[in-house]
Length: 396
Ligand SMILES: Cc1cc2nc3c(=O)[nH]c(=O)nc-3n(C[C@H](O)[C@H](O)[C@H](O)COP(=O)(O)OP(=O)(O)OC[C@H]3O[C@@H](n4cnc5c(N)ncnc54)[C@H](O)[C@@H]3O)c2cc1C
Image (cartoon, rainbow, N blue to C red):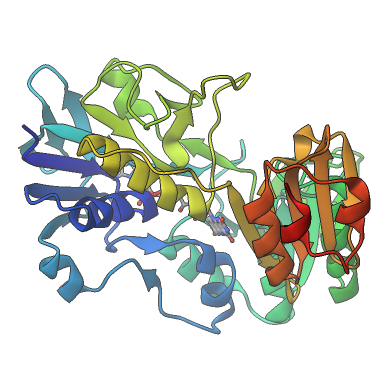
């Protein structure tokens, strides 16, 4: 009998799991434990509207009234320190203990740091606090060096330029967005950054950073030095696996879970959101996904499994990024494609053996919506390439 559910991590996935459990009819106790002072909020705005000042209110998953209507207890500003799986008990940093019948781990990840001194002019962007600190330092005319040409680094560069700073991006790889975006779509973003004046150094990494009066001196691996007023480090996250690891649960670069987000080592423990390293039936390797959509869908899937309700058809994975006035949306897995088809401006469809496996769209939300729903269906390259052909009719 499940009467008592504890969720560790009051981020997007943790908050969404609590809401899903209630929406699915669970009437027992739900407690969400979070080490940030804020109630659960969505992070995407932190590098965009929130940082730019265009919308300074955080995007909370629910307001205070809604949380109390849902009868969800939020225990904030407190971290979970240890899990005793035999006693089904969690010890918190304030010394208290909470018992559970089912435990959901939603501790996400922390920003990866440079091996450099903790200078106040070096920023990261993961939490509201990080965004507030960076916004306060982002004065017009200042020079920003951004380490990392991934989504967070590039969104931050774009927003800082909008605030009147100059931005230089250092990317160690041979192209931007190498981790999750196909090369042709990344080229759209590179062009957009060139148009707003962002200076991009590809194949270059940071060698040294030192503080001097009034700024930072940044040394690159080719001997170049740059002067900066501030630096933003956007080199990915480290999943917060320590609690799970100490509790003896199977972990690697995440907490290993099955298709229902249930820990491989304990049927009463689940892991969701950025933390979950999911093992799929026939997939070659477990996968971790760091997207808004996955926080949402993994939370619901785990809630269904906890309550013993049938699983739902899984939506195609997707994400978006907004930068330089453009919206790039990616669905499916373009990396497994054997061919790519351009469908007019700003739409690329990725096929493998005649099946649509991925889509990338720049400022084409309608085409994106259609393509996303068709992933996994058969499509000929001729139809895919013809903007006049109705994709929905063409896909078998
Ligand atoms: C700046 C930024 C912009 C983004 N933009 C986009 C975007 O445009 N599109 C997109 O699809 N995705 C975007 N994302 C990714 C998306 O926000 C994440 O995938 C999502 O937030 C993951 O949610 P989560 O709940 O798994 O983890 P998190 O959001 O990291 O939440 C985990 C929470 O658990 C807390 N915690 C950790 N350990 C403990 C502990 N021991 N005890 C208690 N609490 C603990 C953490 O402090 C944190 O509050 C963005 C992320 C960032 C940071």
